[in-house]
Image 1 (tube, helix red, strand yellow):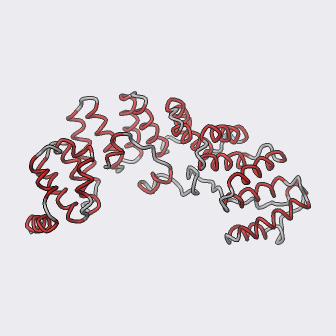
Image 2 (cartoon, helix red, strand yellow):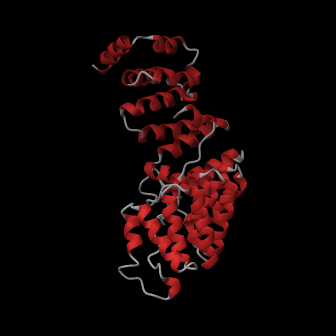
Length: 330
């Protein structure tokens, strides 16, 4: 685990946790929580306000959007708006297209216009919040997500993204409350459970955090990240034996692959297994020389920083390390 994660455990987005625990979450769009709905969904009934049924011509903008011909799609929706300025769906689809073109402020203005004509359009509020989150306007994003939730209390993406924005604002207490609301409806929501645990650590509510990590592990017993974070927390509160067990479970879940050797070596250093730690660190350096510099700063290796054998290893040449690794492997 890297030094930054240990000094200030990072909250993970749904997409990141999905990559680590693919069975726990469904795929989502860039910039959103990944709980289900895609930001890029175009409203299929572009003529809803006029009472006309969607037909081949009204599908044209959708097709252009799907083909990523966004400039043509934008022109198409602008033509619709020119003929029907109060067509909220056309404004919504124009906003989506502008978002896809990274014209963020124009997109937000278009969403604002869309909700003037469709005040209960939860997706419009939600997507505006997504843009605000992308721009780092987290307070404004929370307001947009709240409006999306008011319009549709079942908009799970809006609820999750609100919690994420609250984390960015360091409003950990409020974020925990929102995660609890998510978990009341979906007790197996891995991402909500995991980020709730990390938020509790930030609040220094450590006993609650350990219980929260236990809930995460119950959802996914094979989450090496959850076991790792729980182990470090147990060390922090003075429960070394329990921490050793948690670290042991972490090691069982980490594959013995080149990109894992550095992590394994760090954990072994934490639990006081110096010889094994140096063995894996040596293998890591042999695969990637940058591991020398990582080890000097990674907190998992802190107990070895002043150790002569550790220093000798870091000062060894690439050829010496290669020879040492070859002799051990033989």
